[in-house]
Amino acid sequence: MATGDVIFFDQYLKDVQDGVHNQSSDTIKLGIVTNATVPAVTTADPRWGAGGTTNFSSNEVTPGGNYSTGGPTIGTTAVTLSGGAAVFDGDDISITQNASNPSGAYWGIIYNDTATGKNAIGYVELGGPVDLSAGDFSIAWNASGISSMDQA
Amino acid sequence: MRSKSTLNPTSAQMIDRHVGRVQTLSLAIEQCKDDAKKAAMITERERRMNEIKAYKATLDAL
Image (cartoon, rainbow over all chains, first blue to last red; front, side, top):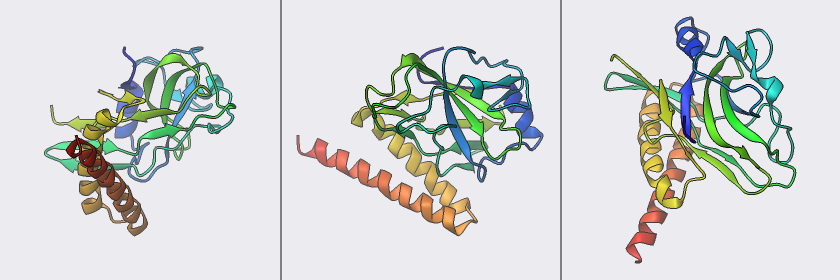
């Protein structure tokens, strides 16, 4: 993995077909965690909270400053269909510097805050440890969108 | 399934993202049935287009 890589959990591929996610209307968030549990594509039933097998919220960085518990929301999300591909996209993430922002950030966990089980969707490698109190921090999603599913 | 994001991008690195986001937003606006959400998307698209224009003006001034 490299810094900036966005990987989707295997579990997400099943959850999306089981109707767990409506990414055009659900609130999708990015929770930031330490390196205590390293996410992997095969992480068992990942969640932001209890109810599954792997609870990433237990390793959340200490909220403070411009980082609130649960992490920022990925705004204006939508799933669009174009040329046989379903593209999921949303606003970029921006956390302004503040002396009380958390440090020790390693991963961003993308999760569905509307879903009853707070099912996790994927994760972003942040190139940690990142100290969010040292400067502004932002994530610009891929120019083609956060994810794309097609017929291939 | 995976994609590649950019952490702490420069203005130059943001241009591709702005253009791509304007394209996905334009499609989303066409397909969106929620008026409030559509309005938010239009605002975000406008913001991105202004960023592109500002960067273009910077290049033109060189």
